[in-house]
Image (tube, rainbow, N blue to C red; front, side, top):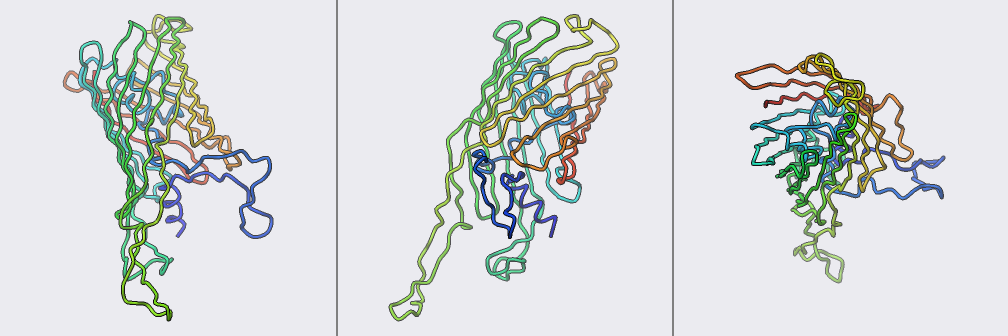
Length: 369
């Protein structure tokens, strides 16, 4: 039963408690000091789930430092660095191994002239959930037996190019769909992103605004009913009248990411000097979405001979009155790059603590140059 509650809550992305319970009973009583919250007011919230083990291990602080196909999910301007066809496949197990909630993603980038074209696909699944109805709140309704899944999928196409030798920009579109077997919603949106390498002490600044688009409403047989029409004497006529619930239109979870990256050790512009063996990158990011509080994050990546990596990060969720501790949002991971047939295969892993939601684990495979 507990697992089903977690799945349903996560599938709807109502992950945070925005108010306190009253002293008596379970009535939610707003306080005069409570801020207006938009948590749970947007659709396709699975798009806010970060993709890739490198990003997860660094606490999502990768907007400025992410390159190649993985940048499709953070700052598409970063795909411009792809010198050859590159691809990533990422698999995430959310909220503990028993939840059944997964997020799978893949992306492909192709260099074109002074830029690059990227294609990305995301598939979210709640896992199997026992079907319940008003008649059978505990399941086993003979009219609606079995189980169902809440799923979400998205397809994005992005194009990025160099404006100057230090400035890159990108633009793209996104199609998304979510729902269950008899109630779905679809969305259309676009993204804009940029990244600027200052050339000063290894500093880079990047920004991305994502999921800008119109609203849409859920449709399907799950929000339709047929009710019997009573006669004047109170008995049913035997005829039925179609009724459709007036669902509210919802928008994509528009968000803004800002990142400041510093090459502390490594290349010629690094803050503390060049080093051919060791490299250290640090980044500070801010994520501000229309349905969340501002979420800062910080991450570090240590590299040895550009082939072996250790990563550490922290993300602050900052939802009003949510029971998050400092240890929640801490992450760590590592990766290795292996030469394969003239190309380079990267294997990365990340683990993130999520408090009462247990943990997230991510495994990624990237192939490129």
